[in-house]
Image 1 (tube, rainbow, N blue to C red):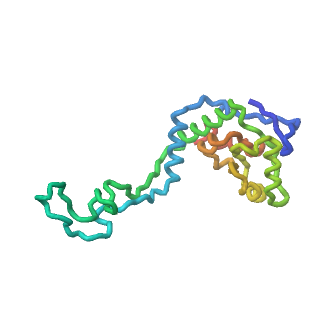
Image 2 (cartoon, rainbow, N blue to C red):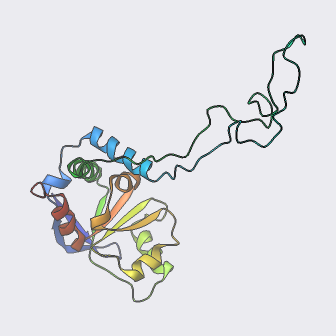
Image 3 (spheres, one colour):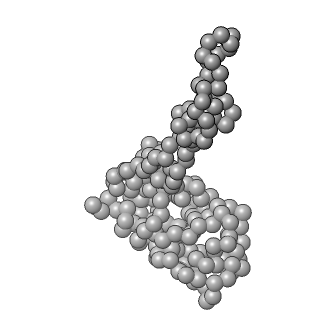
Length: 212
């Protein structure tokens, strides 16, 4: 698969980038994508949710009325879960949501996601670029040149360029990642993916079928 290479002005150059069909033309595995996205979302959870049960609520332990003869249901103390301000029954407890997936499956998921984006023609290859100084306006201009200012955009660089990163951090719906750090969730969440030419080799190296 070959794609045109653009400059940051949004114009085509005379060069083309060859994308490895083993990665960008991979037969997608939807279940692998599901598992990888599930793991990504689960591992982002702090798991610090907590409610107080009746033994943890502050209040008297005195029985609030006699057991029999009132014609109503029996009650214990004021911390009973059926009372307002009482403890929570079977409430959430702190827990670890961590999930583990093997590297091969995660690699299949990323290749599947990249293949979907390639089929949708949602990948744009850029010449390597940088900014002389961090400037949000400069980065917004790049997005405008590709009519992406209102889209979720994932920009993939060979290595983190400090000026590019600082220029983009105040731009909503935009994320900068290194080629070695891309994940299935970010790929699928983006409407468009801007990949600089030098990062393609790194992506193909990481996701090669010969990689152990």
